[in-house]
Image 1 (cartoon, rainbow, N blue to C red):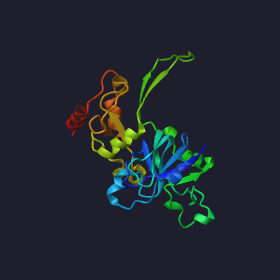
Image 2: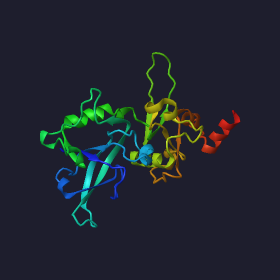
Image 3: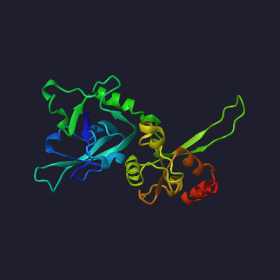
Image 4: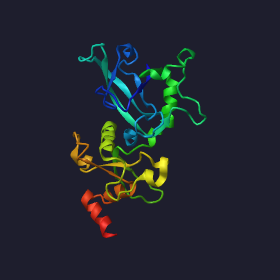
Length: 258
């Protein structure tokens, strides 16, 4: 199995979609075969207008996926290709290009010291891939899920069942929502970065305005079907099992207390 890093530029002329489609020159086709494990990477921020669309201005890894199918770009005069991407998962935190000791995660061959970072696709080992993914703390990242629990009361010493049902959303869709709505709570206007600095940068909950447990499998609009909420507002919206507060209702409650 292949393991690669693919670079996503803030500005690109190609019709790439994070976690869905990636454009690449033909010379990388041998690496981007179906099933290849992919690490997403961004280089250093060059244009400040893209600052809020990134996890950090520094070079970093920000997600994983795997290659689905590859197909030739019919508009390319250089026989470029596209590949579809499956199972995209965004990182809850950026993984910087260098570890805590200041060492690069990727190993640069002696012959590539001057031009290694020019490659939009870079082959890595399974060990490097797994090390970066481990640092990303993906298992703690549940913002793109709604969890509904049937909780049964217990008595001490008696075993009872607790059932959890997960309704999973697309991580790529979550990124679109953040790109549109940003990172300031649409209920109370709290912003994690303004309060906690870099530690809070890029953190916010994404809230589906219609419960996904009721809507089922749909194709929601990232502009109209979602809101971004801080943890407190998100908890209040879902506080009661039999009723979910609308965004206007939430804002009214907040205004009444001012």
